[in-house]
Length: 158
Image (cartoon, rainbow, N blue to C red; front, side, top):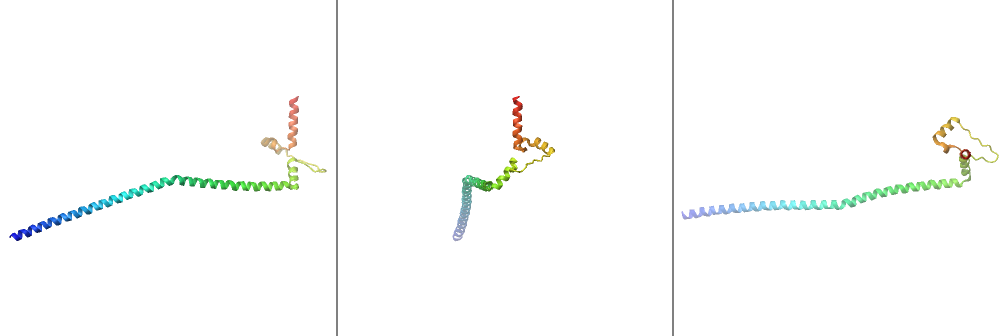
């Protein structure tokens, strides 16, 4: 019987040792899993922190870049408009260099006539009244404005 007790004891001891070993493995497995989870969470938190830091660090330069690109586009548009205006003015200057164009404009704006010609200004009374009411002296011939000024000066002197 002593052999049987010893075997039972040794089997019970073995079972107990086996249980303790299994419990230790399970405990180690759980702690490793928890450690892995906490490391993963720590890594994820660090990654999130780095990404947020990069976003914050790049936000101002990106805003400046976009603002500068808009300013550059606006300046290019202004430059293009200035070039177009310069071309228009060059064309106008070239036209004024032509004596025929200058003569035409002078005749039209100042109502000049060439020697031997008779100048006429046809005025529609209704249109003249409307024109005076709307625009005043700007649409009248220059010499009418001069004579009106002389008449006003003469009337105020009396």
